[in-house]
Image (tube, rainbow, N blue to C red; front, side, top):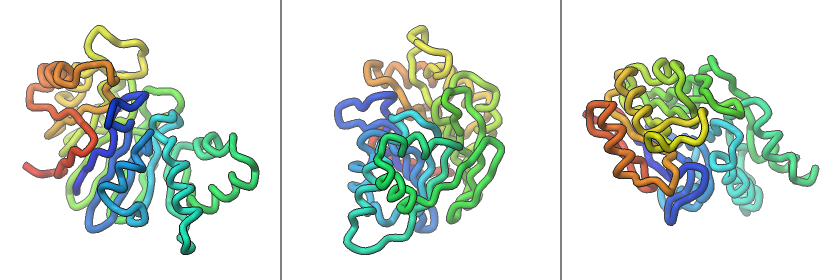
Length: 250
């Protein structure tokens, strides 16, 4: 299983660094997790958008879904008819995405995407992947994702504040991709994690490796890495656009 980071900036993009978006591939199937600002452009440096097999959007904040519009236009105006693309998301998210579109355009978007609403506690089979959804501490309702294939496991928190559900989500995972919006003492809201907290959850869950993501652009990635390593007890990777991680690689 290969994890490729399309974007990892929190809330707004840093120069050359889109917001949240991650491509997970296994056995030739590509699963795209979150479609933040600028991730569609980055995806096209990695593969043709037509090779993506399914999409998952974790919650209804623009830095995680706004490039759904880019995917829509690229598929809707493609010269050849394309099958609808499976989209897994929390209930009501797609309605929120389409509510500002004219009625006709909203109907066209619903034809382009095959929408499946997912709630915490559900598990879905997507290509070779088994994807289990966990409720995170974040508004609007946000899904953490445990993605398994070939005996390997990726845990992705999406956005969340401290909660024991992170420990359950990431228990024994080969890779924990954990949000780390703040540096210690710089937090602005209870629904995000600091880099130190991300490291603590990685250690408590027994995750084999830890990558931190969603860092606000105004914070120093190296300082975030040091904070996370101090609490995790092992090396930590800072997710940046272009990073590739072999999930399960020793």
